[in-house]
Image 1 (cartoon, rainbow, N blue to C red):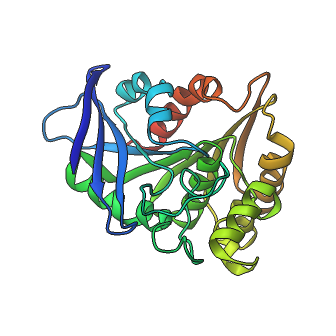
Image 2: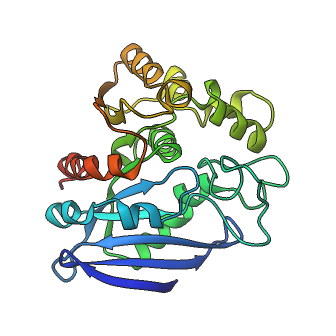
Image 3: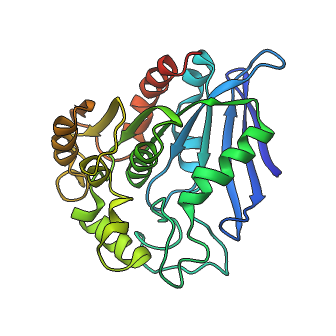
Length: 277
């Protein structure tokens, strides 16, 4: 693991790191904020997954989470959104290819060789974080924004034993039913079928996946609200499944990091309460 940068913030350390991933076959970059802590102590972990076109840098530079993480003693890990590099296939569109990994393991060529973000996040990166940082992986939570909100919901629903809590900002809740998701799932996984349902939060809930509760924030002025995000579909699925959903439609907010940064501290505190030993 290579240290790319390290800065002191709110008493802790904000680092950016790079490592050779056996899962994606590429170098992968991620950021980690470690609050100030007693020597030998371990801290709970909050994973943050970013959206389309983003890297680790978007939330690291714009998220305004470090004060809350320092206050509550929570490590925040922010991975990249896809594999990258000259040997990695790409697409001219912003919503497919590099920067748009959709947190799945692709099965279609040419994407299947490198686009394995599900395995990277569910297996490889947690093992690296556990080995290199004072992380207590018995206490983990997950959140994310937009495509990353989709990732947080689906990874959380597939791994309820791993995460104590799950939240999201402006998530794509039903990729099988909206243009962004339909394009991505078809391109990475092939024609619509059972494989799509593993990467669709509403479908996972319909198929029996359960977690105790969810926190979701979406802005009422989000331009993607009705066409791509469809929070109403998540509300219906959770109501039928008995999942306690706190879904907050925040008046006047849009899809940007002005919105995310406003409420990310709230989410850190919400997760921290559920991450207590």
